[in-house]
Image (cartoon, rainbow, N blue to C red; front, side, top):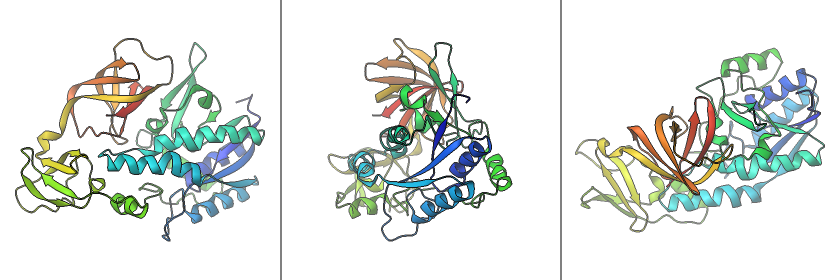
Length: 353
């Protein structure tokens, strides 16, 4: 990074961004810490989430400890417009969105590239577990982080080359335990801070309640079997996702799973687990890290964050692509990202239709 002059560090208040900043500071770089104020909690304490006041304070403390300036930028309007409102619309349409992808692409990283120019920074650093490498043709390749359990490249497939060129991932070669150990060595106060598990703007994980609080009431409907027989009622399709078993409110009859959601009728179709397996999917709104592929190719396709990816044939289709897996995959869910890999490299991705 000899060409790196000043680095803008995205400070969430967690251990990862704090250690990323500390490692860069240790290496002698000139840093500026930036925390984005994205959302206000509904009067609930949200420790460990990037929208919490406590996390903004942790970010400030880390910057003070490192002796670097820290600024908080108000991006609540853009976050609502580009992340929260589409999130609500997707759930009402029977999809299960992945807002972290949209946030990285439209609010966080792309926006920070603009902010970096205002602060005279050449690069942006984040605490993501991902790696970058230069290809023979000069473009940047996006790679999985070395820690397989923490790898976050899945959430970054939508970033353009112009943004990747400005990014630094100081944690890409480290495991989570190594990051915490580095934090302790460098005197980071939040080195042992617990990780967040839920969406930053849905503190209790109750999506249906969150949507109601946004003034977008969910529509009640029927829970039906594959033949259309009514088994019960529900309070809104936003309370369900494909593959869900708990919270159906159905007694007896063995285990039932959500097989699909029909938004037009507000029906939630349930059945045996065998109905969750599919061999193919269609993805829309594709983004390719390098030149768009012109013909079918083989790779591994990851269909959710904790999915390890499965071998498949990928066929480009204009603005999207089709995937046929070697073996059926469980709970391919509309709204989630389908990210294509070859070995550790992210080729591109799209959203499951």
